[in-house]
Length: 269
Image (cartoon, rainbow, N blue to C red; front, side, top):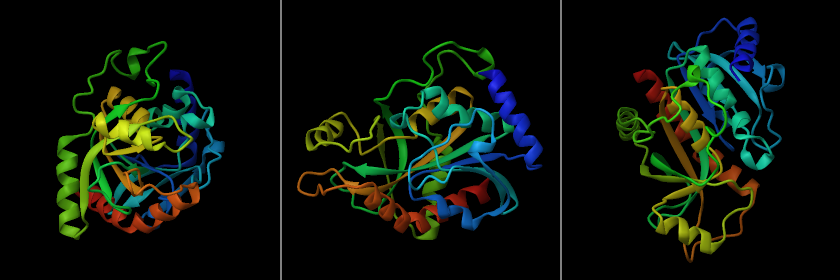
């Protein structure tokens, strides 16, 4: 894998001169955050050796390099998922490349179903922890240059970054929740019984991404902050018929508030 990472980094280095210190991964319906960024270079995933390319609507599939408040960024506008048939190594490969490009912090966003009865559609949830119900992205051969074989996950989501995010949200007047995110494979949305099970085991929201990326990021000693946009509810009496279009629409509606938090976070960096 190390050779593939080096191939990707070498290619990117020829296409941009920006050396990012923060990486951002934008999920379904959340791609317009880049309007806030002074984008200097845009590199399609398809132009980067070994990079996976998503076919999911709402995931543009480009690596953007630019500045926000003079802070150098690399932004993944879209991601790939396990349910598309990609391996966990492929799904998390971009995180490893961003680490080798020089990032120290990783901000992630996703669209998720709310299973906490106090939640409502459009809420933002700062992820305090996760429960992984996907295969681990660390299964398989190990290269010590990518991090420890058995990485600690007791602080998967950085406590200081969470504190900053809550402070930024308060200053901006953006209401936020905190909770546990459950990562599942998808692509089918959950049954009422599954929603109930996820709530029983400690979940507040459920989605089909983020967790593998965070596991790999922590193995590589990146500080992580992740925020879910609650796009639908898996709560008894509030469960509605779901479609990907509805999820995208709800995510785009909440995006301005998410952008405020990410902008404030980057200024603190």
